[in-house]
Length: 352
Ligand SMILES: Nc1nc2c(ncn2[C@@H]2O[C@H](COP(=O)(O)OP(=O)(O)O)[C@@H](O)[C@H]2O)c(=O)[nH]1
Ligand SMILES: [Mg+2]
Image (cartoon, rainbow, N blue to C red; front, side, top):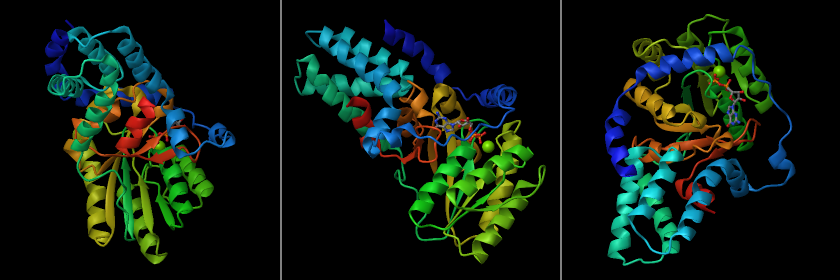
């Protein structure tokens, strides 16, 4: 029954929805007049959690929504039948894995159960893990940031409120910890407060900061950022951009102007175009990714706010359906809450 529902929805799911980006921006615009405060305390650090434990803690809600439910279902069945597969489908869709990806995973699972003559429900989980890992390999290019050898430029794009500025602060902190010289360019010139917010993050992370005043041309800020990066021999230049663009055409014009400046002025630099998406928005994040993919050559995704959501399954759809490698994940608001992403670790963390 559930499967029939999927088939009906499949078409809707594939439709492009640029309108949603605009709607989301308006929504966020109203909500976020105040600058988010930067919190100094880090609970995970105090507890002395290691890298994997922290990722696991960040994925707590996704794990509860997905794996705990899968476990209880597998316990409830004493044989593997269609109903069991239907229940699995429902759980994956609820965790925002996406309908097409879910159907593909479950179809492969069905085949393997048949081929390998698996009969015990408790054997299904390991197969499911393997299939999810496999389907995530659809993303091209690998999950590591390509910023070696220096110099490199990282352009950070995405709609307002997804966590671009925060991500830049955290990323700068991580790169500084690896001994890199970082310059941050304030390409979101829409509000003075946005520039100040970014400046605070640069100070905290120990990066140099290049900005113009509110309302300045973002491409001119990036131009100055590049000149500074060259003169000061920076390893990485990270550029913020505005998320308040009203439609696809404006978005394209604005970003293309920035890309032209980067290509003309900094041809020797390695380039990353990171799209920041808010995991809590689930399928809306997927729609945003589709629009940005049409507008520019996204080289990777930063998925933020994984700590606050049960929709972590969106990672799987991004990698498999859109072929976009997730390179970094945000699992909290503190400066050290940004982690490099590895699909196998992710699957282990949610199924652990
Ligand atoms: N819980 C959580 N909050 C985050 C994360 N990343 C960003 N945020 C919050 O999201 C809000 C918007 O972030 P901001 O960087 O200003 O978004 P921007 O408009 O895209 O630049 C802020 O309150 C951030 O603290 C994350 O990984 N986890
Ligand atoms: Mg911002």
